[in-house]
Image (cartoon, rainbow, N blue to C red):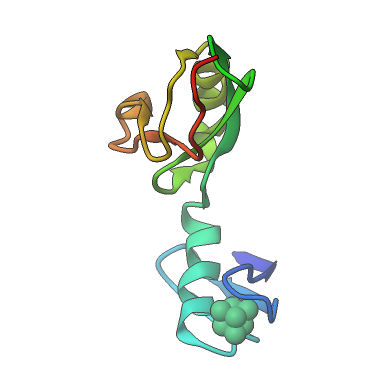
Length: 121
Ligand code: SF4
């Protein structure tokens, strides 16, 4: 039996959504104001995912750390493994926004990219 209350984070309205049902193949939702909230809340129950944001060390740059993010949603169960890989990364400036910092992290088909430009010192 599934019975969860989820706050939808897709938009600023923040609907409180009740997801319930016999199992993951038989779910109903209440409290959503739109279809996006239904899809979001069901995904949160079946396979929660997050965009991962972090920073990596920069060598030879005007800044010492580079903000990075996953270019897609990573299943929550892989977030800690992905963080371990990100924590071991050092990049060398210059770096441009959108540069791929880690290609296909954990074989998930998702790249980790740079979120800003950093010039060389
Ligand atoms: S259900 Fe729709 S309106 Fe409500 S928070 Fe989610 S996206 Fe926004």
